[in-house]
Every structure is written in C-alpha cells, then in structure tokens.
Length: 196
Image (cartoon, rainbow, N blue to C red; front, side, top):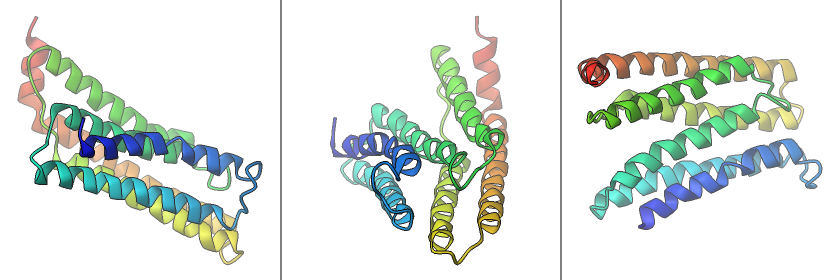
C-alpha cells in the first residue's frame, strides 16, 4: 500500500456519494441549485486523484500489479456509478445506453482474467485510456449543463437531449474501444482460448 493506492481507493469510496447526493438531495436539505456544484466538486476530486495516482506511481517508481488492477477498476466504478445515477432524476438517460459502458468493462475484465488464468497477460490499450477520458468529460458536461437548467436558463428537454447526445457519443467510442482491444490482442486471446 502506498500513496498512489490511497488516491485510487479514494475514488472508489467517493463514487457512492454521487447517487446518494443526486437522488436524495431534497431529503439531505441540499438546494437543487447547489447540487450540480457539489457533484462537480466530487467529480473533479475523482479525476484529479486519477491523474495524481498515476503521476505519483511513475515518479516514485511505485507502479505495482495492485495499482494496475485498482486504477482501471476505480475508473469504471466512478464513471458507471455516475451514468447509472443519470438514468434517474432530471437527466433520465436510457438505461440500455448506460449498459454499453457496464458490459464493455465486464467483458474486458473477464477476458483479461481468463487470459491471465491461462498464463497470457493482456496489456492495456491507449483506446481504453481515451474511453475513460471521454466518459469523464461527458460526465463533466452533463453536470455543467445542469447548472443553467437548475437556474431556469436551459429547458429540461434541451438539457436531456444534449445529455443523451454526449452520452451516445461516449457509448459509440466505448464500442470502438472494445473492437480495438480485441483486434490488437487477437493473437494472445486465441492462444489463451486454445490452451486446455
């Protein structure tokens, strides 16, 4: 356990706060106009800790196998928690669209685990990092658009249409990243699946 791991775990522990604040803001006494700022603050902490844990691990030569597992897991938990949260409340994203993110991560994780059990290590792809960055940007945009919506400057239907458009674009790239991952590792995947 090192400082980089602590920042990664911080993201995992913060993630459940998104649905709690978003769905229960009224019971918690949080004004709707303050809600997007609160959620943006949490998201910024998560994204900054994501950058910092990688920077710190490389700078201090503390890149570990645990970190390689925890970091993408923390990214997935953070982003999927947010997008699942957005299927309710004012955003109302289609659940099937959010399943694209969930199924992608489950599929890649299962594939990597299966190959690892067969003695084949699948390297992470740059497209996966881009996918995480796009999901983070889209989450930020949706929360930023919530500010003019809560102050009456943006109509609800326009807010929902923009949120849907940005999320659909992220989902499209997520599908592309799966294809890139499988194609780039096709030889290793075939080798792992052929082993008894």
